[in-house]
Length: 453
Image: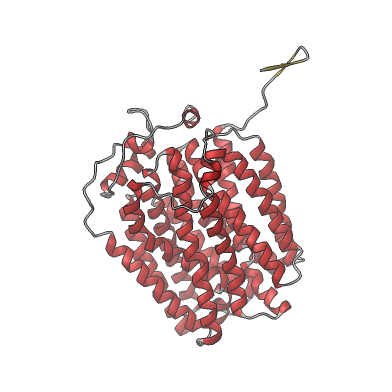
């Protein structure tokens, strides 16, 4: 309470832990929905402005480059200035991006909007990911794995439906997203801060790789599958509609969005189904499903089978979800509270490296190497090789390490952790991950979130 001119003024109302958690999860969902929303529109833009598939992949790829730049420069900023200002500022930039999309009159405008969108997303993912873990570690770890896939699915299908059946397709989807971002910005104002301010904010803007020593080995082992699953998602997000039109007859925009939706929705469901599995088991499921799904999809392209194409895409989606979840659950629990945002940023850095840059190569293959089918065969082969490398690494011997107790990984006092958190910690231990450190010194603000669990 404060007193102003003799009157007692109550403190401002703040969102409770779970509303704040849900709000932050929705930020990731709709940021990723905004990133996939242009996918069904690329054919419309291409017909209107007469550009090549290479230009399509460049428009798609600059987003990934912008995400990478933001992750490298400001990925750890919220560990120093707090989660709220970083999240709020990112939403403002994201809103400016969708305004740019809605008013775009050519390729340069699309490129500018995609760059803004990438900068906003790269800035927000580390802050939101760490913010959710601040509130509840087990649910936050799960949300960090499921929300990117869920958001990509929502954006692809929603945009496809609007393009196919709603008026002004190149404007309406962005107007809807703008309204959502405004509401989210208002919600962030009423969130309680969960990270204490710490010195070194300017120093954190230097380009560094902030991977805790205890997480480096596990991160190297999961990097191939994380690259593979997001490279596959990048292909579906940029050239997926063109590939679908080669196999399926029907509404091109809707089917292109449906293909990306199938991939990412199956991925999100897989995360939920496998949330209690050991990280190593989850990674194995992901790599095997990815190899099988891509093989079926390429076979469908060869024989022209629409049904087999979507079956293969669904199986690959299982690999997408399990592979990414295995990566998240392998490395995130190893970070101490002050290391979370930076580590999550590196994980997303790997993801977006695979998400954007290979698609430009695929665009070149489409134009100069024999068309979209040839690009799909070569791209799919590379994805399967990465998945195979990751699968082999899960059978390798682990280096000796000091085993972590559930409390050490979760940051809780002994006897106070819930089953989900302890299960995650046990899964990390059973998986033989090296480098578990001493118990985390969880901040006072993070413990305040525990009181509401």
